[in-house]
Image (cartoon, rainbow, N blue to C red; front, side, top):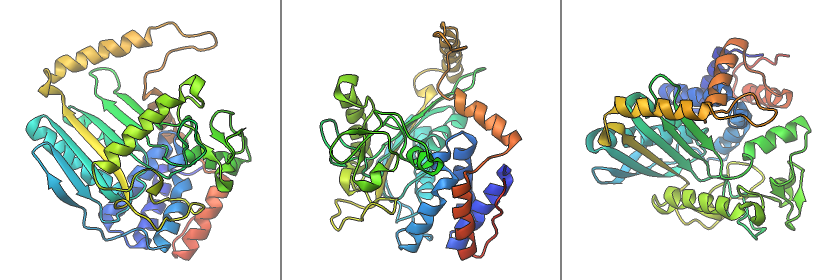
Amino acid sequence: MYTYEYLHRFTHDFFSGMGCSEDDSILIADIFLAAELRGIPSHGMIRIRDYYQLWKAGRINVEPNVSVVHETPSTAVVDGDGAVGMVAASRSMEIAIAKASQVGSGWVSTRGSNHFGIAGYYALMALKHDMIGIALTNANPLVAPTFSVSRMMGTNPIAVAIPAGNQPPFVADFATTPIARGKLAVAEKKGEKVAIGFIQDKEGKPTDDPAILKSGGSMLTLGGDYEHGSHKGYCLSAIVDIFCAVFSGANFGPFVPPSVAYLPVLDKKVGEGTGHFFGAMRIDAFQPADDFKAKMDEWIMTFRSSKPAAGRDRVLIPGDPEREKESRLREEGISLLPAVAKEMKEIAKELHIEFEIRD
């Protein structure tokens, strides 16, 4: 087991060793560890290797000039200048919040970025300002549209955070696929299979092999197949891609630069880097914030009181599992898969920093 502090310090030292500034290294470590604490290890320490490989390939700019290249009072386009995604994304969300504070809502589309970790982190930034936060991103082209075997889109997550009063906030953070790509990587490292309906082989046949992406397979959109609504997942993923990339001038669909080593970097580009989209809406632009939060409390309690299905002890509100996991892991510590810890030990040695393998 590792303490939060130990892994945060290592992650800080890792990105500092790559050449990131002190402030950026702290921010990136905050977001990496937020993923671990919230029970989303697919976006936590397992990604260290991906970032290291991107940096060695010269695809991450550790001294970026993140800048606004177009704006109106309520909107902006941000160029991340090849930054680590967390840096470009945090700055973009800050701009959305600042615009919302002035005119009621703020919307920012970002280009020239990279993988940004968990989308929920940025949506949550809005809550302390009595705002609703929204965060979207496109991602590695590993997902096939309905009726296709071509890898055209990413897992393209959507995150929405809504404040409440006495109740914890509503926080939805989900991929537009049945499983996140990182969870396939976790299953592969554990030597486990995955459920049918998540992935297909290069011929379009269902498979439970989490390593199938390395041999031409693809992920499916939410629903899995047409009969179960995969066309709706396809629509959601497409909307995310358009908001993140077509709005901003980032690469869309199959042209998104991959953050995994087994996907080639295409010669053709239709934009700059990976794209994100952020929104912030000031609650008092619609009604007094306290009134809204009281109504959200009532909404949450109403859904909590619904009758559980057989074998379930309660009905969850989006954000409950992550919040409960965070509380527990802060106290108990964070465990890493042996294969992940081994990778981190090897990379730490190359950067001349320390990492201890623990049982």
